[in-house]
Length: 56
Image (cartoon, rainbow, N blue to C red):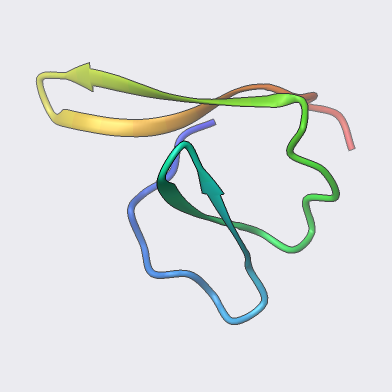
């Protein structure tokens, strides 16, 4: 799961993960199963989450 670097939305939960301020959608109940990582490619550097489930 990757995200654009947008401003937080009003209902987002703000977490500080290893010194990086991250806005999490309020509909996500828990982030304990996720790992925040970075990826570099020809378009630049981005942050993404590893882990979790794709089912609802």
